[in-house]
Image (cartoon, rainbow over all chains, first blue to last red; front, side, top):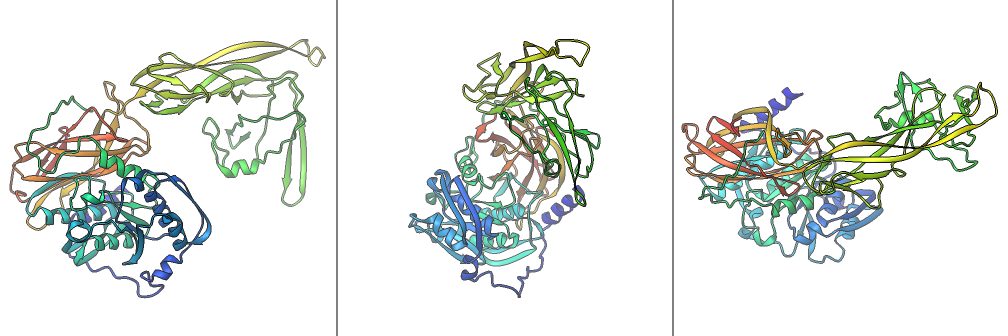
Length: 263
Length: 328
């Protein structure tokens, strides 16, 4: 098993000009909004979860890839409760977003995208940045998300070196190979979660900061079968946003160490 | 219940006066739910034995009914031969140490009483709700005032937690049996204890390397990638692993100067611990100075566990052909 994981990682770390992933030509059209919103859901219960988690629970209940391109503090932390015994994805959405008039949704690139009238447009939002090319070999969804983040960082700071760490998602969903040209970040994210199937992407910056790329990532991808994350997304994003020790993007001063030997 | 060499216990059965309760052994087997000793009835078990005791001095009649698929009710047996109820022996506290994460963590303790009767092996009953709970160091941990056995951890340290329970020992009043003298009951108080080590997340260390090699970088850049498993450790010396799942670990990286690799951007992620308190993490470097440079970018990696900053920061050394964490 470990050998298989290692092989997959090495394959992912050697970027090749892989083939364009083909979309099946038969079966229901995933872009058909009526079909997507008509997906059946039964026994849907949300108890005390923030809006972001409620939406992801709905995506999980219907197996619908999802993108959430707007978050604010309320959507990340205010508990909500919903119940839908029998209905459709569309009915579930209306139930969850009732009374939140600024929220809307659309089906695009086979992904259900939940947005808000206050989301920033154009170059004020990094989701709309156009990447001349984005390609990945077969790799985990988390690695693919990291590759996309690296490409965005390179566009924002061309030629500047980058160091860090990321969650490789060793036991998670896999995607690719994929090759896209002249694609916005949002379109690439849509393509990734659509290819993964059981996943969603969620921005993790507040609207006023949507033109900046924080070191902890502009977005996160959530796999529906990740029991350690599903149901905690709002909480985790809040923690990430508010975590102490967040260095600025421009290191210039030597940090205080204050360390003792670790294990 | 004894089946396939495994003894399986029901420890929370209360009967009201004159109540008849049916227990479906097949359902118990098929549910594969472990008992308090983490034993499960073997899934393939088709035969076995059942024994029971009574803890109060009231008559209890038990019966095992075997239902045959072909022949309906095939046979029935009665038994309950002990002249007296089972005798209380003592109380064992679970979970055993090390058992706490703190501060602000809670843990449900249990007191499982041992009983002996003439009817075979020891039997057990959950007396958590009837026991009296105490903790030797209230600054480290204290018990909830309303929920019996619920321990609140407050600060790093060690404390002895105790449960005291008053049970009854029985002995027959006359010998030899059978005779009609009844049973002599003696109230006995016994206690069990356990050590609670309140662990505070303090540091993160590398457990093993999964894979490493040339990183996938943008055109004009090269670098190194190393995937490792990390472990969360506590505040003790030597550090003890905190083997608790679902702790959210997030980090940030601050590059030190000089920075000969020109690594001006940092990118980090977040992770959840598994059952062993571990998680995979991929460290990476991409730089226009690679692969030719022998330079090194040193960085401090600060971790938080569930949003709480750890006291120890890791020193990560990034080179074009290697990445080390605290020298490893």
